[in-house]
Image (cartoon, rainbow, N blue to C red; front, side, top):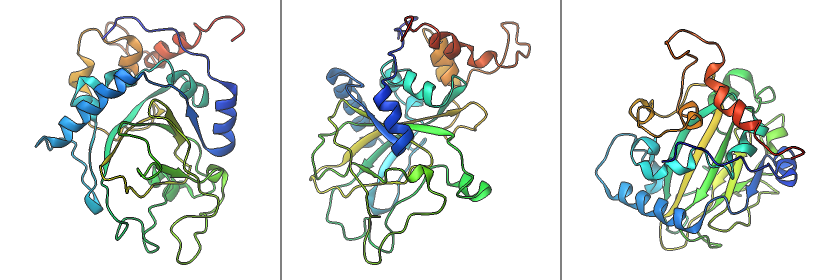
Length: 281
């Protein structure tokens, strides 16, 4: 880990425009191939282990972990990725932290029970917000950054999205006998790209017929007044060499160095970082 951060990459206007229009967008070359290889190795080792802390096993043979940053430091370079984080900050604000770091292993196999008309898998994230506030009143509160670590092929089961669904005032309709709403798409991406999408955007995992599990890492960022989904990163926050931004994203509280309350201080690292963009950018 480095004690300094690279300057933020200026968010691409086309990317932010697409995100605001469609509810998702692609950041090209978000990570280098060498990092992707390291992330894949760490993910496969975790999935092959007997670790139960944060284990997230679901129906249809899904496997994974919540809070994977707490389990392997190999995932830490994604936390404050300068190729991605400035776009997240621009779309939300500097007053954010990490809500979840989710490793997902989607099994390969014929679509017998995975995504059938009776259970299509289409959903919004943070479903409790919609339940409490109502579908039409749910605001943008969080953004996920999805990285796909196994080979990206047409049959690997990439996440599908319904463009513009973040602006709907009622649930989209899926025709009887179908598993996807009209207009659903699978983004055209490469393995080093990242897909950003917000909590209101309707999405689902595709059907994986590639012959191997599809591994994805999804980091969700949200406002600091939202409670994280993962277990607190208490031990990780004490690790030497973390930057102030990494500490903020891991839940740095609003405190002065002497421990006294300092309202808003916990978001100062990202506020300061955002101001380091070159003039005119």
